[in-house]
Amino acid sequence: MKPPLPLNAMNAFAAAGRHGSFLLAARELGVTSAAVSQLVRKLETHLGKTLFQRLNNRVLLTDAGRTLLAAIAPALGELEEAANRTARTGTRRRLRVSVVPSLAECWLVPALPGFMEGHPRLKLDLTVEEEAREGTCDIRIHYGRLPGTDLVQDDLIRDAVLPMCSPGFAAGKAVAFTAALSPHLIHTQWGPSYGSNVTWSDWFQHHAPRERPDMAAGHAVNASRAALALAEAGAGIALGQKLLARQALRDGRLVALSPDELELGQSYVLATPAAQHRRTEVQSFKAWLLNEVAIP
Image (cartoon, rainbow, N blue to C red; front, side):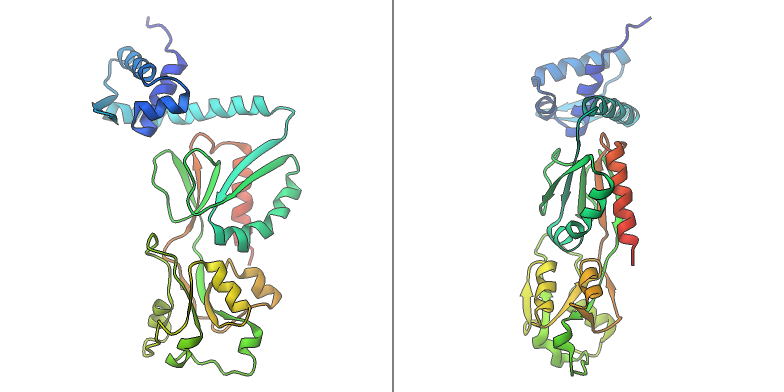
């Protein structure tokens, strides 16, 4: 009868499998890469299987390794959560949330007091950032899906855009979507990393295909929240995201000039490390987020 396998060997294997590197696994675990290699060898000997292909400074999971990692990842996550629950007993709990800036400032932050009121013992560490660093958050709210097999990812919302401006800008005007509007258009340029944001050119192509507005004649900003702020200030017409502009539309600070909308190229996504996914705090926050976006 084989002796029971030490849990630290399974943990070392799982870390190496996630990172594709004994060195990075060692940094995560606070040991040497030699120790990780030794533990993985011990596991391979115990199972009689080769779990990794060694390629210089990298390691690749074999078929046996991929099968084992998929099988043990949920169990290791549950063990980590059980330890975290024990450590949190009698203390305030914390949830680390990372979110892209425009979504944070225009929608999430104003809505958060409602969640906090319902969860008074749970404290949030909120980070507003374009990109999240690995291992720094329990939930990441991101535009589009993230790479990585150790993430549980759920669609939050597929937002849409439509023309918006201030009531003062629209007052007394019969706004027609023709090329004559070109100087009044506010363009949002997300930058070279994004290829699926919707532009005024896309909107005209779908809803006013005979018009040829001058896309260089209007204003340009590099963030959705800035486009909405300019429109609210009366500077022109933004192609605003409905979720981000929801409160401003309710308050009458912005008005929709047309009901014709266009969906964004991708959804906003909730991404959670598999090891954190089953945490009560994570599940509660995700349920709250999904309920909030469903409110008209």
